[in-house]
Structure formats: structure tokens, C-alpha cells
Length: 358
Image (tube, rainbow, N blue to C red; front, side):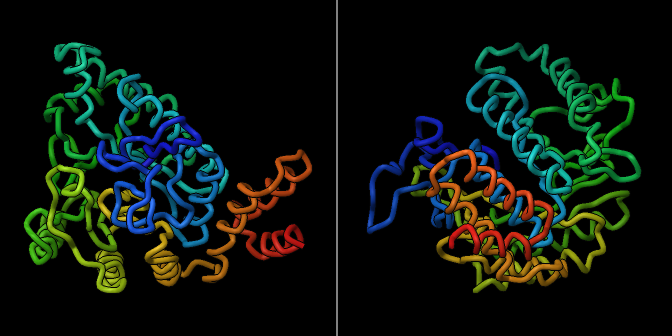
């Protein structure tokens, strides 16, 4: 999720840390207020901060994660969509440097908001969607780092929530290469398949049934993406919004169980939900409460050629970034360590971090 804003970086606390209820400038019970049951190990960060982006991608690489599916709100300058888009491009630059893949989960719910905000009329929605798909083909689908299967870019939508089946056909029509389009939980319209997701709406027990039903539906689809997740524990009720029943963490067992299940399915792609949705408590990013536990579990199942101790190196670099005097020589040394971690050379990065401290 590329949507977090920290006051020290962006000049304000963004909605995803406040939800118009919490004030991160205040403490409650000895803890900084935030729109989450949990806290990032590095504190409440900003998604435009280059130090944060390199930290995230380095951790993903060392954990054995192969790429990033970015929750994407399009390119319009409305609400925080434009800043999220800019953050996404910055993240993609780091992803490519690490040799990982990227794809998108497009939020077409934004179209409803754009129409309500008079950015464009409903009669232009399909035309605008078609232009957006053409922009993607030219700019991101063309990247050798964009996730593809047999040359077709893998492209997801969280829903759809606005566009109808025929709209997607029209929107994809001008593209030279049709994407492998995937819809949420079901195969809809021109989609080649779908992807699974945590479904706490009817309670924890039913959420496991939903995983079974997805697997049954998807058995003969050309493409499916299975899901792994650690828990679901949102903050919405405390912010005055509709909340969902929790899916318990069970000391890491939920993540290990869903991850093992997803890998057994032989799906070509497994999506982890999520890296950093702190508002819904589904994050596997290192936290004060869980530490590196979920990334260590990921390392084990992906057989990543790194150690659990290697997962601590990006945090060491991040701390140095924030504490060190920003002279040119210092920046060069820290940039070199960053490059080593993005390349997966943890042994050299560890030596250079130790030398830097000394």
C-alpha cells in the first residue's frame, strides 16, 4: 500500500494513519496514536520516503518474496491518487533495482469518487479507463520487470467495483497485448481467472470455507492466484466505521497454514495479503508486536538463500540513514550498502555495516 503520509515528510499525517480519528502527535497508554492495532518497527512512516522504500524492498528480497502487487488508484490528481501514483513509481524504481517483479491491483472504486468529484462525467468513464490502460501498456506493462505469463502482463482489479464486463472489453481493446486480467474471488467478464483474498465478513470459520470454495471454482481456470495472510484485525470500529470480525493470528499459525495451503495448490502465483495494510492488521512487514516472525516463516518456505539474521540488516541501514550526518562521503557509503542489500549480497553488507559503525 503506497498511501502513508508522515507529518515530518509530507507536512501532515495522512488519512491512513489517522482515519479522521487518531492523532499521531498524541500518546495514549504510552503508545503513539495511529489507525492500526499494531505499529511498524520503523515507526509511522511515509510512503514517499526513499529510505522506507529501500528498506521494504530489501526485506522482501531477503525474505524470498519475488515481487510486489501495488494497490493502485490510477493517475488522476484527486484526493491522494496522484501522490499514491508518484509513490508507486518511486517504489517500482527500487523494485527494478532489486531485480524483483511488480504488478498492480487497480482500485476501480476510484471512478465513482472521480465522477462524484466532477473530475469527469460518467459518460467519459470508459474512455478514461481505456486511456489509462493504454498508458499502462506504454509505461509499465512494457517493463521487463512487470509480472508476465507467456508474454501477457498480469493485471488485477480489486473488484470490479465500478466497471461492467463489457467496459473492460472496450478498455482492453486497443492494447497490442491483452493482459492476463484477474478479478477478486471470482472470474468475471473478460478475466482469465481470479485471485483469492482474506474474507472475514462472515466470521473466521467461514473465511476458511471461502478459501475452499475459491479453490473449487478456480480448478479449471486458465490462471489463478492463491492467497496467504497472517490475520485480520482492523481498527475501523475505533474510527467510527464498519468493522469486520477478526481472523486470529494464533501465534503465527494462520500465516503458516495459509502459506502452506497456497503453495500446495500449485498456483503459479501466491499473493501475500498483505505487506503493509496496517489499518486492517494484515501486515507481514516487521512490527513492534510480531518482529520479523512472518518474514522468517516466508524465508523458510521460499528456501531463500539468506538467514534470519540477514533480515535485520535493512533495519540497521535504515537507522543509519536517519541518524547519520548527511555528508557526501556518508551518503556514498550508505548507498553502497543499500546496493549490496538490493543485490542480495548480505555478507558484504553485513561487513560494511559493521565497519561503518566502528
